Image (tube, rainbow, N blue to C red):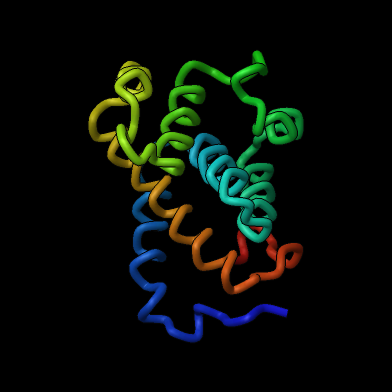
Length: 151
């Protein structure tokens, strides 16, 4: 049973909902956004968000194979250079190195695939999902009930 429901404080989640709308309308491909949201949720161990974004990714046309192997994306041949750059950025921002932050190599890889504006939008997607993970995990939000397109 969930510990609390953050939606009972609508003003508290309103900024995250606005950021979600911004990210969704940023122009970055929806399937790429979903991969990033899933990868951060894997790193953070957020079952609720993994359930949600795996369903949204499939609804956006993502394949089962790519979702199953996402955790090992570096070894899999079926992610594009742009997706690899986004996933590396996602991991670096989610796991911020306490001394160096995001490594220059990861930044350079991202800038090779994303304009400055797109990188800002990608970064905001990572900020967004890390925020949601930090609500869903301590609240013990229960996975399994989310239906894509009804949120």
